[in-house]
Length: 135
Image 1 (cartoon, rainbow, N blue to C red):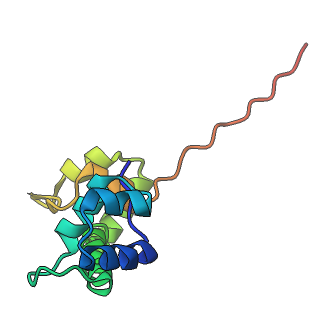
Image 2: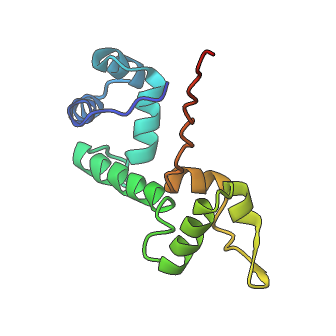
């Protein structure tokens, strides 16, 4: 399982790397796997080559913001949001919405079925209750 370091662990890692500890020993002290330490140092060490906890936090936050931007395609695009919402109300599947021609052209290529499942809450059908009567 992938594990994110906490800010406290980043501070401790920064101190341990400045003291010259190897990654495996640092991982043991912090209670994480050596691969988590390797990944943290690889992703968050600036070009200067010295790992700093504060810089690591900023770099991690920037990566998370960039990763989450892909889920915001419908925000700010009211025409596209209306199109998707209308078709969902007509009980279209995400695959149909993503692939159906729209006015001579295809829906924007940014809309794939998996994106629609993540971005738009699709209401589940409520099962109808049938009353059974015994004659």
